[in-house]
Amino acid sequence: MEHSSQLIAGVGLADRARKSRWPARLDLTQSATGLVLVLFMWGHMFFVSSILVGKDAMWTITKFFEGYFFFGASYPWIVSMVVAVVIALIVTHAMLAVRKFPINYRQFKTFRGHMRMIHHEDTTLWFWQVFTGFALFFLASVHLYIMLTRPDRIGPFESSDRVWSEHLWPLYILLLLAVELHGGIGLYRLAVKWGWFTGSDANATRHRLKMLKWAITMFFLVLGFATLAAYIKIGIEHQGHYGERYVPSHLQALPQAVAPTDGIVARESVR
Image 1 (tube, rainbow, N blue to C red):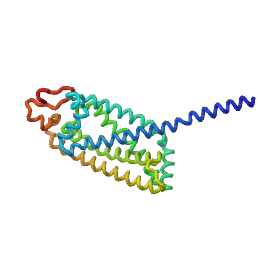
Image 2: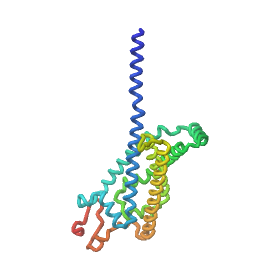
Image 3: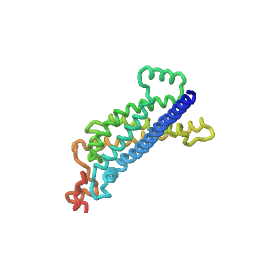
Image 4: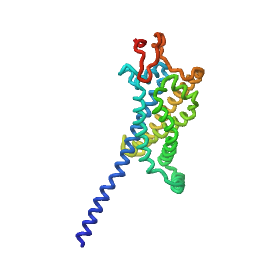
């Protein structure tokens, strides 16, 4: 009888040990998806900010991701595939992150009281990460759905029309604020959680990481608002020709030149 009890207890301990690995695995997956999304977000910002260089530069970046320079034709569905992967990453990341959210008002009230009492900066940052993450559920979904279903409507005129003539600029202002704050805080918390850049003085390391986090956040906010202002300016100037697609300068002088879209290119014109 005693042997049986020990055997059962042993199995129970082994089973609990086996199950205890899952929280760590889920945390690792949450961290990995978050890191990938932050890096994608930064890359995306640099790509869309090409409008600051010029309309032709933005057109070139757009057609690069549509495969124009590889296949000789533009295939917007390639962008849709990338967006679908991003959506899958966001859903996975959000489902894992929501495990740590307060699940009812009582828990939220307890957390708020705790945060106000201890005045701990990292706890406050976590609150803002939760708040901006919740906001992104609604803000990012609109933009991602448009990019998924209308990838052909990306370009200097096309994007500017969406921002201004389709009245999406308020959404993009809120989205920019939420995504940059959420991403910056998330990356800082990843560095602390996994011990990246750890020095001999933990407090000094955290201080340097916070300074770097705010510097990066401010850089991308300034870049983002400058980019959004450029699209708004182009959208205002172009609103009388809403729906017209952009034709780059090197194609405008050619007979019957059209911007390559939907997998069709006027090859004779491109020559």
